[in-house]
Length: 329
Image (cartoon, rainbow, N blue to C red; front, side):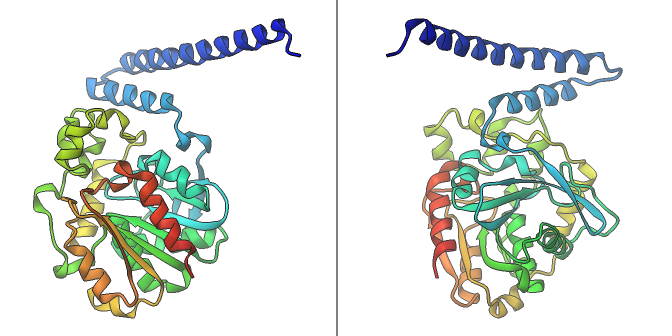
């Protein structure tokens, strides 16, 4: 038997907890505004960034279920989060982005089968820049060092965009650290890659709170998707962490000057899944055949109608494809 008094008390407590959370969110936003405006010389851009950061935190997505940690890797301190359990899956994020821009449902789906590690690349977000030069190969060395520092020995690796390039450098230079590799919108680098000049520098503007969302997210979403899903900007996990423009420029130079791994692709011995959307305007899908035709035994997952932001458009379908690949013999 359920006593009505106990039920009423539980409902009352639930309502109070809900109102407390709503009030806390309002207090956080008000406090952030007050602090930002009180600081001498604080610009409206800084105020906007503060509000956007608080707003992202207030969403309380799956990303917020774990706290960030830091670990020394060579000359840098790497900021990372770990989700789930199982075989390790280390995820290398894209150009100028930070570990908080992975799609939360995508993360959660992968973490249902894997121990997922997301981290900030050298000089991005909460990871220090260190003293070594910014190069794609150095970023690959950093990832190898992170795998070692976390005690994995070796791990599955997923790299998105420039992270896909870093992942290829990693598997070429540190094959003993990789179990399987997922290239998500990556390219071979060098003169053999297919460029997308129109959108080359858009993604770094994700840090710019004054830039219009449609302009920025056109690098991630095809036009048809934005029209069919008018709330795409509200759903996007805007970065909470900031990266200096100097470090973003250094990362861009690292990408532009990378000699690539075109000649080394046939020597890759680890299983590779080449994946992405065929409407990607940031890393054109034409880069994919270069990879899967030259990497022995490479598998392919092409998502028709998807763009660079495949993980945001189809988080569960894409995660399923990845888990199928990782679990296959």
